[in-house]
Length: 475
Image (cartoon, rainbow, N blue to C red; front, side):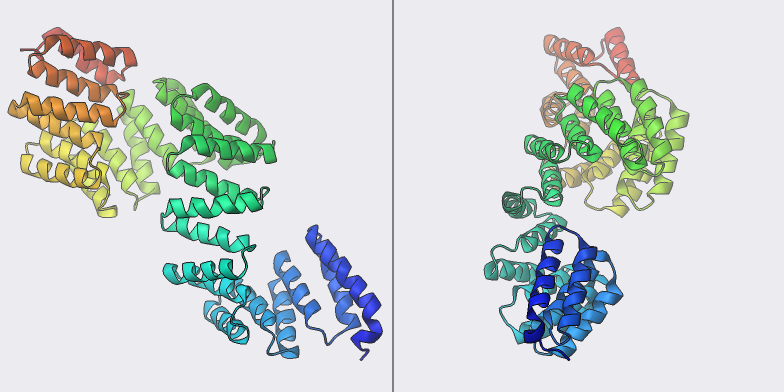
């Protein structure tokens, strides 16, 4: 067998070409050059490890594993072979074997950042979160330039809803690697989860700048702008651009139509919303958000038959989702079928015992059924989980009205309006009734006019008509 010294000029030339090909992402050329290196020096470990990494990136896991095994056989005390083999085994789902290799690597070299990184990913996969965070942190201490560990730790933090910690890691990643689209995506989504919509919009704008033809970027920015409530025209423009760029992607098209529907619902333009949602359903028939919105649109336009059909379909698609039962409970409540509304809320709470709206909606149903004790208990549960929940304060206000406690009714109705940003006319109508009960006619009329000016769904319009006709809300 020729020695490396005898072959070193062509060996190192091939190694340099392989490394250059790897850096520019040309994996086929990289594999070819590292194969030449192995031919020049069969006893060298490095080209075996490099080619294993290339095969791994190409998805050729069995070939990668063969090279890793060969590297370990050549140098059983070299930790690189164990890290590579462990990484391949991790991808294959063989976690016990992968962990054993991570431990072998760390035993051979206790300060090997790659060993900690591999063990962190295994622990993360097993939901051993504290141990995984400790390993990711150790990687960053040993190798501050290893942004992969920061990105993985950010993903873990996001998974356990420690959003601030995840954002902190990602801000470092995008600073070091400003072209890292995956990091930008996660950062934008986390800002969105925290309702930091301006920051989210900036991130998605950055993603569009990195790739101007990325339909997903326009879709996400559109969703962010729609949530602000003040950039509806810009949101519609983003959704339209997402549709224009994503014609071959049913998921993006469907979500863009759903996004447009969200804007139309914000404007009270429910017929336009239904049109968009029906288009979305054809593309993403089992999408929970779309089914939820379509049920709501049918409900507020009093199309009871289609609303119930869609609600039943939503439950069938998501039988373990609290949201599906909640939406059907809401629909039953709007139809004054409070027994069924209570039953569906109970199912929703069985799916998620920490669902505040489930308790608030069941409280309303129980109040309407005359079960004041049950209603009080549900309101208490809702407010314990979310002290500012508008719907819970709405029920408190209605219960106070029934008891003739006008002061408490005004207090809770005002809190409901504040919690909904004074943008929900249905909440404002409860405040109208509360002021009427308190004999404050001018205040009641002011807020009644305000509610009407905001644009009311048909069901609320009927309530206003009854109030104006009977004038029983003032005494």
